[in-house]
Amino acid sequence: MASTNFYLDKKTGRNESPIFLYFRYAKSKRVLKYNTGLRIDEKYWDQKKQRAKRTGKFPNHPEFNQSLTNLTGYINNIFRTYQNDNIKPTNKLLKVSLDKVYKNIQPEKEYSELRVIEYIDKFIEQSKGKKQKGTIKTYVSARNHLFAFQKLSKGKLEFDDITSDFKDDFVKYLTQIKKLRKNTVEKYIQTLKVFLANATEAG
Image 1 (cartoon, rainbow, N blue to C red):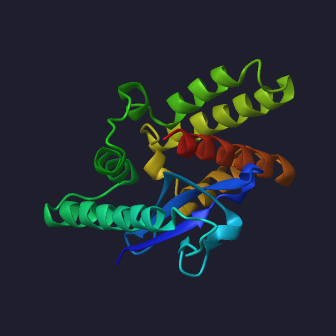
Image 2 (spheres, rainbow, N blue to C red; image 1 turned 180 degrees about the vertical axis):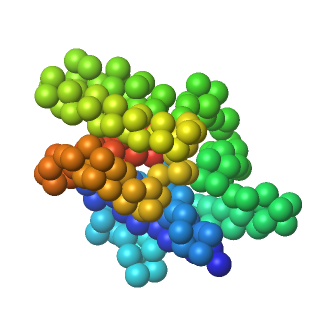
């Protein structure tokens, strides 16, 4: 059974926080995190109802909440259609379909065809000159370990492949095969999260 939730991203440090849809499916083993494009001040957000509060201080709340309701309907219909057509849904398929009906946009071909390592290479290149050299060095090291781990699976790593089980296996690889220290492993896992967060924010 699939479920839909909306949560604020409070890490931005801005007055208004972006709202993300979390769509859990495949017995909750997979989660699509989707940027709704909507932002709201936390004081006008009802986390229990996962909607904007009905208040005159936020006069656009009817249209705002309707957008969230529409989005819930879109993702459920998309998911149901894939199931009826005997197509195994993935985050990529769901996102592309949701972009079409909700945002009326087509994904950029360059990005939509990128796999994890290719995306990380692009991200590192764009980060040069913006991040400190030590940070870039950590990015490159984490990327190289991930690339080496990818070779063991004899396939190119997709974003949908990075599940909690994958992260556990990657940690075992870093600790048992590469013999890295715990703090180094934690640093690379945190870097992996940075890569994934940036990819999510980008699309």
